[in-house]
Length: 557
Image 1 (cartoon, rainbow, N blue to C red):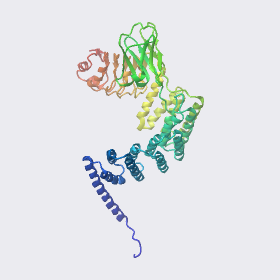
Image 2 (cartoon, rainbow, N blue to C red):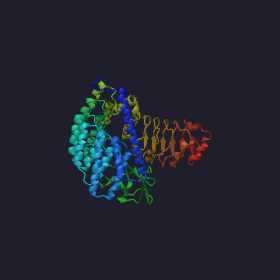
Image 3 (spheres, rainbow, N blue to C red):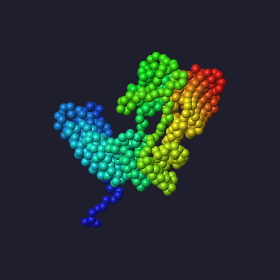
């Protein structure tokens, strides 16, 4: 009718949008084609900046265009003054703001802004802090902006306490915020460091954080962010560097340490009657950074050993620490084989808080027995409060998680393997260790087995390459019957291994046994009940691969 505004139909609107999209695509292809030509021709000029800006304002996530702009600016600054560079980079900063208004989570725009601010002769960091605050007020979970804020806070030298207060405000708004919790985990050790170095933060603040995250986790048990933060709070601190195993004998000298390190950084030395031995160190696994180091003396080790024997290393402060070794009665060797300690003691106050958290988890499981995050947190709490007391419950809970959460079943199995192995090592005495039927899927803490002579790993679920076996420098007999080994690729060099049983695995070819060549003293091998046992002319084929072998499947070769 006359005088009435015509309303476009949905079909007409869709046609208009289609035409506009087609025009944009055409403009983009022409512009991008020109950029490619210029870049291939090595042209870095103002035209390149203008064309790339036109494209980026439409599509800010084309990383190659941001890279091209950086190349042009680096080229142009060679012929300009510092003031010219400042003006140009301020223009780049404005461009990134335009792009971020269109897409606040543009990887390319945030990365380019980082480069711009780091390259600017006179950056205004306070302005950047304000910009981050503005973006995080609009979306407190914008992890790109959180990452940029950490960069800006470092450059602006903001006080960690000030930033920690900022995270307080954001968590109060929305506790479902991975980035905020993560930033908090970086700030707390700076503001409240633990003097003993045992916990992530000072004990009083640690208790406060546990209470804070408990409120968040139990407000919405299905939200993962608070559970992850709680895992950090309950996590073990890195053990202080120490010598955990050591041996000095005419046949072999070695040192195992609590943490992997380079030999030079460790400052390792072996001392006889307080005099350092001459020689060289090499890692047992061939890596530059290792936990097991073998000493090759320049001259033979005397037997019997004269006087006291010690191992020396450098602690975190660079001070020399001497650890005495126990010399056997006949003086033929000296060793250090201390009982390992996993975890750290708690004060009564902190233990009480964690026990309350464990009780709260149990209450929550009464309402939702299948809550995987609550179950996993229960495991971590039990390991932190009193490992020995909760051994059976820990293993049972992990078995439950394997059944409930099949997508992470392998993670739970590996965690179970680590904890079960720790319990076994705490009970270990002597040079023979039996780890039969523990459902192990991985071999953790191998350096603590460095002095073991007999190791039994039968009836487990080991199937992955085992380079960590290189830590077993003293091992003479190893049994891994009825596991799930399909390959020995990556097998660690075991210089003293003489007898190896691999019965009931899934080794299919003689070539799969070739990695055992790194065990020069291997004389007895048993591969019965493997597919390889039915290979024609097995004995001659194995002899060709392992010429030093004397007994195969219980019969002399």
